[in-house]
Amino acid sequence: MMDKEWTKFSRFSKEYINGVELFLDFSYTSGRLQGNEILCPCSKCRNHCWARRYVVYDHLIVIGFVKGYNIWVNHGEEISSLPIVNSTVYKE
Image (tube, rainbow, N blue to C red; front, side, top):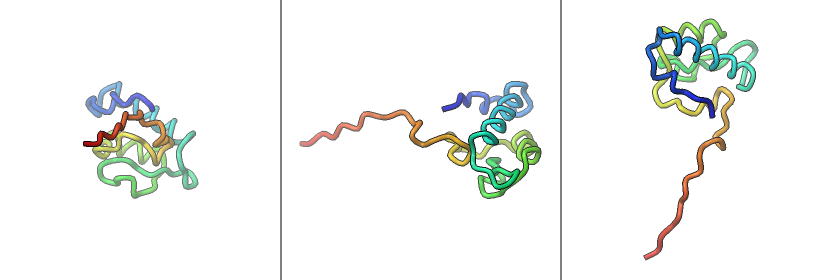
């Protein structure tokens, strides 16, 4: 999984802006594309609207990421990359 600490910074900080660029690079090389568009993960579009890179960039800077989108399954991350939690079942 990619480091996403930058998503907690101010949307106008250098760290956040660099993180958005890294996210877009990752999405356009590893994610699901529809032509030149990806699903926009901003809090307005909520991964329901396809948009070009510059639109997604603007949305992520101005609006920010949708809350709770921590594993970028629509943008190239695998669910199997989740840490495995020990799920021992105890019987009484």
